[in-house]
Image (cartoon, rainbow, N blue to C red; front, side):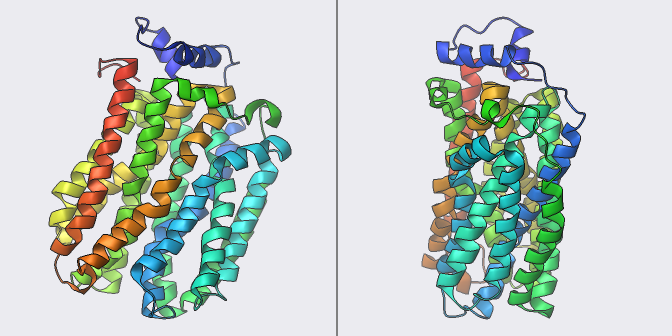
Length: 435
């Protein structure tokens, strides 16, 4: 159920600005979405593309460890993590550019170019595993560009086909990413051990090519590209939108710290490579569960309420569990709970923004919000890597030296929570109300 419909079923909200009311009015005046039909085929395509995008991000921590042990053993952890951070940052930084491109050539061709660039980036990376500069270009820039084209379309297309089931549709799309991260983390661990890092990249590239390209041709748009892929900067006149935007900007500083550094933590604590991969797989599996269940929660309890709970759980588990995770049982418990919260963030925030902005401005609003994640994705993990390096955590056999990085990530999660609360209170101070 959209925010506008939810508001219409109760007392009018008097504390909204004219800009916020215009957003709601625009959503009310849009023809209702079919809430299904061919939209489920579009969701399937987005599921496949998100599978491959998150397969890379969910496996990067394992790839990073393999690179540092083999072809890049003379490099530092912060340098190699920055390669992954660059790819992550660009996958969001070019969101507005992607919307402009889709406005011109349509969603199908935009997604097709994205999956092609993604596949090429992995195949080329196989020949650059011993060259930091080459990996920055292939793994960082080329991957980031391709991933951004796919990710932006995957966040935008469900808005054309779903209204009351938008959360469920987004949850299924993001479930693809959770499954991709879970399955490919295990596969990556096996491949790096058995075939080496170069062939791991090649297999990523070839499999994504043969599955992602045919899927892209199934994309169909319900609204002409010129009518839906628009960027409206007046959205920032809405205090609610601005707070949701800020929550994403701050929140992503903490989001990727667990999947990127859990392998390093488990290794430092003396666990084997297989156990390390298992912990990461547990996190990714929980993230998949969080993505799917949060989609249902967005439709049942409201997307803002779901986002609020997700960021609260994210921050609290870092302070109360990860910082004391000296045993495998605590690590697994943290991986489950934080993974669920992590997955919910990626569903609840785009759903909340899309519903607030309405169908015609939703794609542009989501692209603006996701573009705001760029600083956190670019420097969030390197900051954590720097804190880990400066405390000598990599040479320790204790969780204590990792606490500086953990508290930094947890603090950013709680700051993000504060912005979500501000957005929620701006609309209605009654937290029991579905929003």
